Amino acid sequence: MVLHKVSVIISVYSKDRLEYLLDCLDSLRRQSFKPFEVIVVLDPLRDIVDFYKSRLDSDVKVIVSNGFGLSNARNAGVKNAEGDVVAFIDDDAVADRDWLKNLMKNYWSPYVAGVGGSIRPLWENGRPIWFPEELDWVVGCSYKGLPEGKAFVRNIIGCNMSFQRWIFEKFGYFRVDVGRFGKLLLGSEETELCIRVQSENPMLKFVYDPSAVVYHRVSHERASFKHLLRRSWGEGLSKALITNSRWNPSTTLSTESWYLKYMARVAIPSRLKRIHKMENILHIYSMLISSFTVGVGFLVGKIVRLLR
Image (cartoon, rainbow, N blue to C red; front, side, top):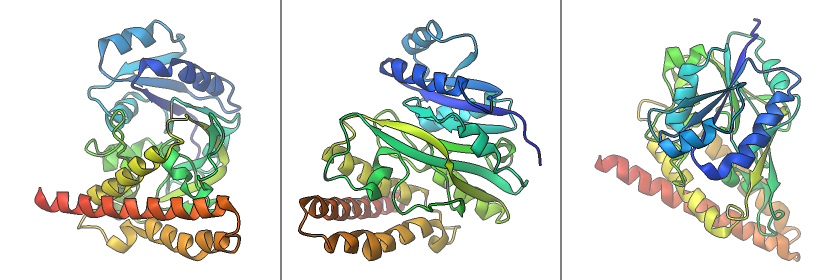
């Protein structure tokens, strides 16, 4: 199977992101595999639209979402894309020179529905001593415990993912009732889409290839314990909201189940062996608090669903 054209989609909701966005666009212009088009999707606010349209070069297609939130923006990008493949990167991330090349080499079969890659954190003020790599998903990055080599996965991660465009036409778009909305830390819209696709056609697969790399900025606000708690809560709530009674729960939450086992059998025991170091004590505390908060968020989300 030969796929030639890639549409890269970036969503932007704030004027404060201009500097980051320009760095992201520059990294796309330097790709060894050139994108067919780069689409910037803006929230439907006149001041944001005017601000970015006057500052972006003509090689960037600027469109306006018909609704607020990340899912609406991504859907608008897909509907305006002309490539065989649609790829997504965050506005505060920069792509490695071979990012698209390494994503595209995995589309060797029509049964590969999507491909994602590694997301490495760029800490604004350095990694906090209490923040273990196992929790890097909290700041939108790949986390310790993911496959170290190429592998089939349940879902790919939003900051570095791509799909064959026909997937959306056949199976539908990102759900707009989940996913990031401004600073509301819900998520999992890409997870829900991947689960939905594979539940309707189990022959379709998603590939994780860590050689396809993007670098994601982590501001000092997100490198805080407050953000850890808010994001963990949002993760639990989001997973409850996307859990569908028509799907097998063991399949739907397979990645979460595996992750908890990894934490209990590998991540925490490895630090208990070096408990004399303060860093390891803090890592254990952070992992336990995050897991507990995710669990509470999940239970609350299940109650919310029952009351609907």
